[in-house]
Length: 325
Image (spheres, rainbow, N blue to C red):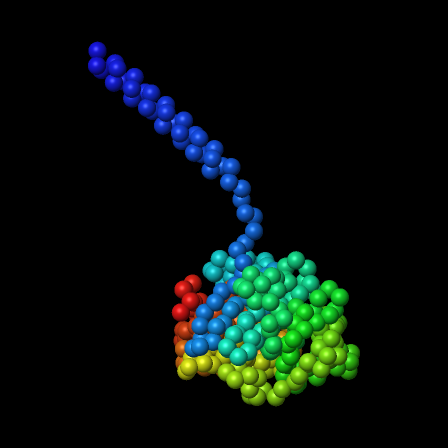
């Protein structure tokens, strides 16, 4: 008689287990999906300086924006990196450096100029525990809208009311010139408009300052010329305790193509030939020095190293997510 009793017990236990599994599944199913991404900031130390990468958003760019290479080859390279072959996702990053004496922002994102795609620098800055009023210095790599439009709000007023904006002298004079605007392609009108609108409140307040490349901005923050993409395109260097980070701006627009083939240019380069020469020279230096680099359009947080892969060809090696140390 024990065998049927044991069989009944096993069946009963099995039913109870199944019920518990159903209840557990129901409980899990009730947890709502977040439907939002985590805050877009990442921190690391460069010597004694705290550097925070800030994600402004991402643009979906047509692959035809890359020039000097057949589209079939570009699409093949994008496919190899599991990137879109019709539209290229292009991150827009800004960088905040706390030197202990100054709070320096390098670029400010696209603000409302590109709709909901961009304009998240402020939210991510606040998520990182920083208020825009705390920023005292802003350095622009160049004056394209996705780097400067975040300096103003929807009323065209200055967002960073306590900051001085530093921009390379040739860059400022080029994009604020009515003569240059008249002589430029129609597609660039939006860039000139954004430049004038963005600079206006800072010029009015006396906080728009130009510099010659190589001049120190604040202790530990300096600049290197990187012309071609724009007339005054600038690399911002961050140096502390023998460590150096180079914020390379728009030196590279697409990591899957332009590291491997630096001769591939971007159709919004003001001087494509010079942009290619600059890219080749800087990538060579970065590969040799093994210094850390940060790019405005590299996959967030856009920080990593450049490794040589033969003559005039390179690979991007992104940093790993690490504890702050």
